[in-house]
Length: 265
Ligand code: T3D
Image 1 (cartoon, protein in one colour):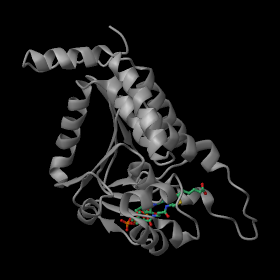
Image 2: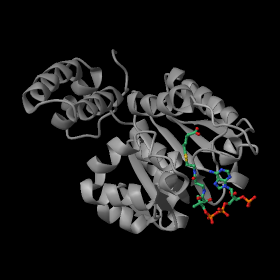
Image 3: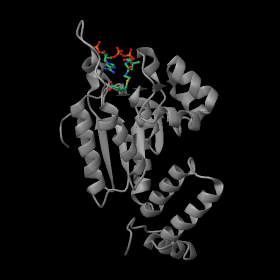
């Protein structure tokens, strides 16, 4: 494990990344962005990595941008910032495109970009004490890191607009009821539930799961017809994987499949 603003740990079949600036509720500065980018690249480069878990140290998941880096001195004029191009957008694009499931274990408050980075993950597990806040409107910004795209798709237009415009915290239980997150669990159960999910994915047909991610991500911009064509193409790829052959064999032999997660045998 490396001690820094990002803790990264390789476990059997998956990696765990912990956002680690607890005194700032794990808000992002540039160094943390860079360390996170490196940790994700390490997970991607590790052939044995079949899932990624992201969580936060301390009582928060992530409070978005570290605003102490944005405080203007008296008389100083604001500059056009490039943090979305350089950091936030590449990060959420990468999380969506990783060829294995990404799980966010939201252990506490998720605010601003920290909220939308969690929502960009494939599965969001939330501790009962956690909350989700589109805090941008409180400081004159707009939801970023995919928020304006994800929110209406996850919770519908009416709730998305109220969440974005009012910037009120949404408690984890309501977030689950609204379909913003997959599941809300007791605080003490969060780490164990997240580990179980990762262990499940570490033994899953990883190539097939990567194709599922691609199909779901493309669906929002596709017509029904175009999506059928995409499903045909991706299913052809899935057909060719050793895990499909193993899945069918195991079914016929009435045993648990032993998936390798690899592209070829
Ligand atoms: O410029 C660009 O790059 C554009 C990109 C923007 C992306 C964004 O994410 S913009 C949104 C930025 N985030 C926020 O606006 C959230 C700010 N934080 C809060 O509203 C509250 O802290 C929370 C609602 C998240 C939690 O409230 P609470 O009462 O549980 O905790 P707290 O006391 O406010 O925070 C604890 C400490 O963390 C505190 O420090 P202190 O007083 O103990 O020394 C607080 O200042 C610090 N902290 C929390 N969030 C941030 C932060 N420090 C810097 N930046 C933060 N975002």
